[in-house]
Image 1: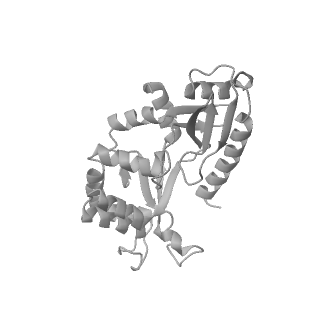
Image 2: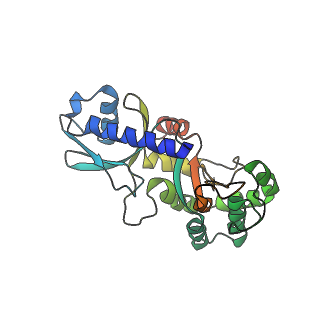
Image 3: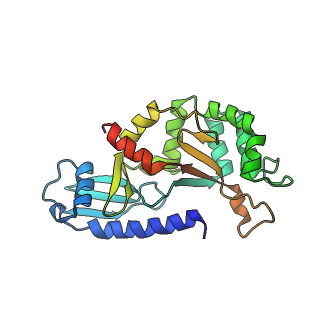
Length: 254
């Protein structure tokens, strides 16, 4: 089982346990960590009952929490999970094209995605990450400079892969929690946006926008594998997400 699937399964179990631990409970009867989490999201909470339910599965928010008639959306992360999004590479390139990203950068992304010298996966020998990265290093550097020169693009991108998702009708989450039922870190969307606005990510060598690295789900270096269509999927990862959230929680108001 690959890491992404294992992470998804762990996340599903945690989500179920999280809802079970909160839904229908009185705030003051909750264990310490969950009281802290609810108070962070609802500062005026007192002796009120908490409602917690699964949110739309298409959204980046996992659960909706309601206290005293006020609803907040929460994204849940657990374990070492750094994967935050995946989509068809063509849709991602079309998104970048609509934002005015150059043809050269679009081609660089496709060359890195397929690793076979083609823009569509129909090239020759497929090369592993260790070989394709140095071959495309100058192109990737130029692409990274273009992809990261505009904070407006960064926030549109983060809405797509982290805060909200691809569906315009869905709401972005208000808070993100990384941890388990006993201990974790919670940040607001506004705290993270302040951090993204101030932080420089020029040190990252991989293709990235802000803190998020992206690349192919699989390349299948020999043969087509069990799911050849997965060669067209690009994965997005926020490496060091848990540590960054802990820093953001301590550093920014929000």
